[in-house]
Length: 398
Image (cartoon, rainbow, N blue to C red; front, side):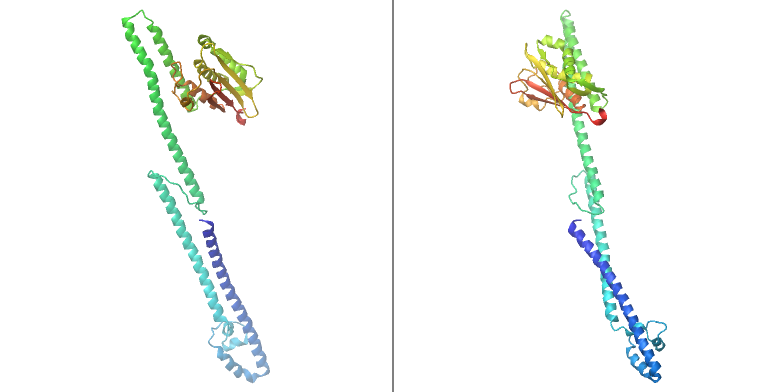
């Protein structure tokens, strides 16, 4: 109900009460003044009769001219002995009673009209909310645009919140179903390649037992093992069952330990790593899983680098966050790849190795679990750069 309608209803209710009070006041005052008039006239007649006893018949004759008025019982008044009451001498009585009746009737009418109007509006509101829910239950869509301020406003807000939450839940369920189907298709595709390679290797082993087929089979089995481990880790992250043991760790220590784990890959690829010490900068993270995320980023930079190239690392701390940058000297990301880098099973155009496309999504998930943000972009001078920002932990985690 808008402000103007609500104001009119309040005015009508106030008028109805005012009319009723006016009518009751008019009746009371009429009765009061009639009583005073009756008392005064009785006193006058009593004084006259005391002084002139023979005037009784004259007074009675004069008073009989007002016999048309209704009688009201009043005690201890000489006029009562003649059958007269206070209302018999109320000359304004009919007007007062008529005005009081009109005021009382108008008040009652407005009050009943207000009740009927409120009932009708209540039925309209109930029908509107019921129709809205029926529409939603049959699969329709709609919004409660009417913003009335009445006793149903709270119920309307709660219904709207509930329906909005149901829409969001449905959308999330549909997105999860689509992601499940897409992930299942990607997993099947990833498994298809090593299984096919293994089948071919088994067939070729029968014809050429002396070839290096066992080594090929081992590589495919290793790939399947990595895929299995990555999928299990992602499933734990998605379900929220991956437990992190977070402590305050120096960034330089994390970068150094991660590069040490990849030392063999750096040597094999003939790529160097540069990690300058840039002062103390602590982050509140799980050391092992953060190393895993940074190792995946370094692997990506190694794969994009030529021999004799360098993978660079840098970090800095400011009042808002700790920033870590890892970049290479390669060709950078393809323009169409940047927006999809962190999609699961997505493989960029410039990749040189036969990866499965899980390393970057895994790194992003680990970083985001620790109040961090991971992004990627191309440098102006060439090369791809990964940027991590770790924000201060919430009060309950420190």
